[in-house]
Image (cartoon, rainbow, N blue to C red):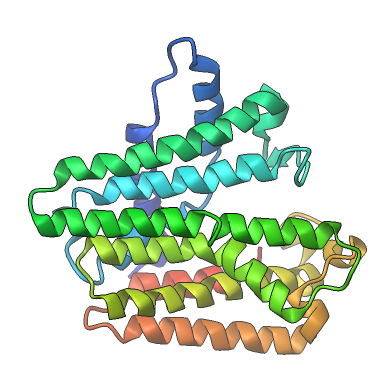
Length: 302
C-alpha cells in the first residue's frame, strides 16, 4: 500500500462530496453563502469525513451506504463552523488560517457569525437528507442513531462543552486541574473525531458494543493528537512547524506537557496511540490504511 497515494485519492473524493453538497451562491442571502463556502473550501486534512468513511468500511462496503456522503459533508461543515467562530475577535482573534485570511477578516465579524450559524444549520439539513435514501425500518434506525450522535458530539455534551470549559479556564484567575484539562481535550478535540467514527459504524450496521469500542478509540486519537500538539510546541522544529515553538509557555497556557513533563507526555502519546490501533486491529475486517492514518496523525511533526 502506498499510503500517500491512498490518502490523496481519498482526500480528492471528499473534496468532490463537499462540492456536491455546498449551497449555491445566489439570492438575497448570497453573501452569507459565499462566506460559508469560503471557510469550507479553505483546505485542510478532511480528517473527520475520512475517518467516518474508513470506520464504515470496517463493517460494510461503503458503496452500499448511500447516506454516508450526507453525514461526511455535514460533519465537515460543523468542523468548519467551529473554526469560523474560533477565529473571531471575541474568541482567538486569528487573522489567518490555512494560509488564507480568516472569514471575519474577509467578510466582517457580523457576517462571519452568520456564516458559522449557517454552516451549523446547513449541516443538519444536509445530514437529514440521508433519510431520502432509507428503504427499510433498519435504514431509518441507523440514520436516526447517526443523527443523535452528530447532535450530541457537536453540542453542549461534546465540542461546545469543551469550548465552554476552555474559554472559562482562560478567563479564570486560578490554576487548571488535570481533570479540567482532560475534559477540554476530550470534548473540544476528541468529540468530533468520536462523531466521525461512531457515525460511520452506525450507518454500516455495527453493534452498540462495536460503536462503543470505536468511541474509545477516537477518544484516544483525539487526546493523543492534542498532547502531541503540546509536545511539538516544546520540542518541535520551527522550520517544520512553520511557526515559532514555545508559544504555549510564552502565553502562560497550561498544557499536558506543563503538568506532566515532556517525557511522560511522549509516553502517554505512545500509550494512547498503541491502544487506539489495537482497538482497530481487533475488528474482523482490518484496515491497514486506517491504522496507518491514525499513526500518521498522532506522530506528525507539524
